[in-house]
Image (cartoon, rainbow, N blue to C red; front, side, top):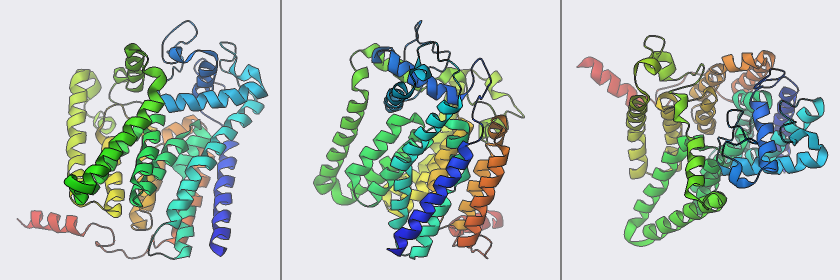
Length: 431
């Protein structure tokens, strides 16, 4: 009973910080003609409510794709439609076709912020609480501390409640997927992760670890026995979930192709804005975007991404374990962020989620990475006038981590999970 009391306090603290950040500015506030991501989310509600589903992803006189056209998978569109239905009931002006463009008011801001909070409460926060409660071989105090630090991670709070997005939905579904496959609820875990991908295509950052972990489980059970049965069940689950999400867009081949074109806009180039990845850093010395043709950029980024994820994925297939799965999620997500094509600064959140999951195992490295990941989004946060919320939330997270974890304690190579790496480096240097 005491555990649930303190877990409730932790959740309330997380909600308080979230709502405090939501009182500040947001992306594109008072900045016509395009405004920002806040307007993008509102506009998607306008489009999905007023137009038939076959027009959601197509350019038309009623749906100018150059003005925040839908570029996320169907589950995001359905979520926008649901929010629009509630908005219509409260104030039809918020989603009036054409007339509502750039709509801003205190009442509408309250509504939009509330939709993020409700989505967080329904998907992400329960997943965090359950994940921490399921952690093995640690005390109740450590479980509560884990939950507090994960819920106080400033990067996600600042982007969802400051900048304005719904990353907690896709990340929440992904976390439910991690819980499922780690606890041998493989079908439920696969379903949850399929929902994550169908909400935001960037969840592909996590797809290879899920695939390799489940495939490794099938190999371990034997592909001529229980492993084959599990594999067939997993295939059916994935196919069924994708079919249900995409069913309205399977009526015509052109519909499906158009959605895919919107989801993977390669015309935008190798990266956008100030991104803390390899290509953006390298462009300081050599302008790859200007020198190489786009198809060559795609090939190079694919090769680097594939080679960087390969070792961890092979090991996970051969030695599937929940612990190895979590570390492979970190490795693969970071590889995608550093090397893949068309990376956004906010994509670092896809690396930060699995890092949060190993906070208890490598507190020093995890805390350091989560702080740096938030700092890497500073240009975006400054543009949205979120400097003060950034400083306050980063300090709150830092204090929580240093209070409950040995962040400053003497840490060995074994504790940092770097022993084998350090041995390899020493052998190389001594040759």
